[in-house]
Image (cartoon, rainbow, N blue to C red):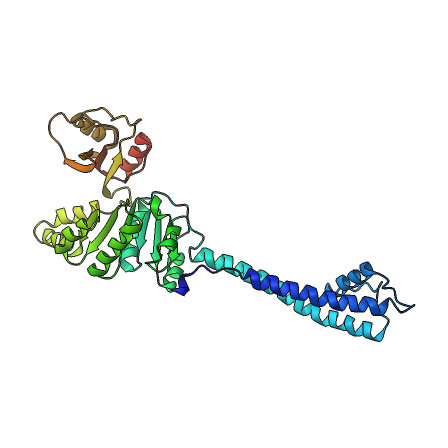
Length: 356
């Protein structure tokens, strides 16, 4: 657990060392002044002369305007000269330690992030990396929390800091997890090793961050209801999705190819994607009937409207290609299918990006 603590510059040690140096130099300087001031040939008559000589010696300038003339004065001067290297080493070492602490804390995420409406992913692996590629394609910022120090170097190699924030933390150090600005995130993806570990962790996490949305992937699809009862917003069974896609490839391969493309981000203009876009107050379709919006979107943007999401009693209700007189209202989400060109036209038209 101690390995996850924020590294701090040892100010106390630096201050104590500095004070001891000042006391030591002060004592030697006072002794030298007492000895030198008694010699009629000495140019060191007062404390100002002594301090000036010390400054010349420690900075290795050596103007020679003030020099010790007594034997013991020269011995003390030799001590000043020899110790100047140690003083420089101490100063340089403290500066290097301070800069190293700042750099290390920043790289490990201890300085925090100002990301908002981002995705927080707890746990890093190859699957997580694949998910992030699609999130970044959809222009979503991501915060990754990992307890493996080596993962930080991998993450920093793959992604820029304006795309992905990485935090090195124990998963149960909820105070440190706050650095990911988790309370301002749009959703938290719990990406741990097995279903039992995920369930226990979600329960503990919700005690600290209750009013957030959570998503998990399950190896055992039978646990969906258990996770939903524990407060998980979305549960995805890997085996269920892969088995459906495999069966689709067997008996309707063209549909399977199209389906796989639709659930991913369209990187090229010719690729298709399904997106959901919030209807804001200035949206031209706010107040319009669904069927009219359907034809208008196809005509103006080559976008196919396939569904509408409304909030009913605090719950999201997905209406798949609804029939009858359904009116689009502010706060609804339009679910659409489009290619890359259609997306560009839609963004100019709606002035808003996809997603929640």
